[in-house]
Image 1 (spheres, rainbow, N blue to C red):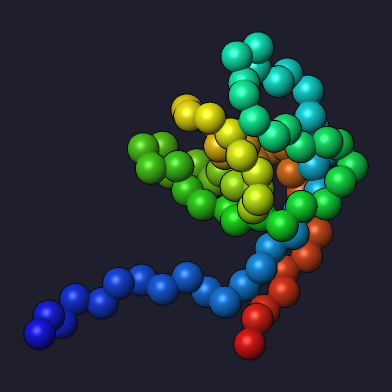
Image 2 (cartoon, rainbow, N blue to C red):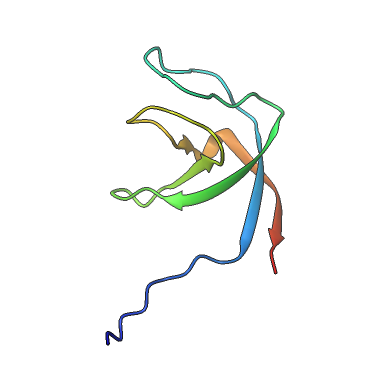
Length: 82
C-alpha cells in the first residue's frame, strides 16, 4: 500500500462576473463569456507560468483554449459546500 496522498480540492464553488468580453480570437471555437453575466468558475494556476486562469464550468472550447485570463473576471462569491 502506498503512502502517497493526492491533493484534494477544497469543497468550494466560486462565482465570477465577466468584466471584459472583448478581443475574442478569430479562430476561437466554443463558448465565450458575456460581460456582466455571473458564471460558476474554477481558478487554477497555469501549468507553466503559474498565473491564475479562470475556467468557466460548463463551457466548451476547442484546444488550445478553454481557460480565460483572470483580468476578464471579478470574483463575486465563494460558497463553501458541505
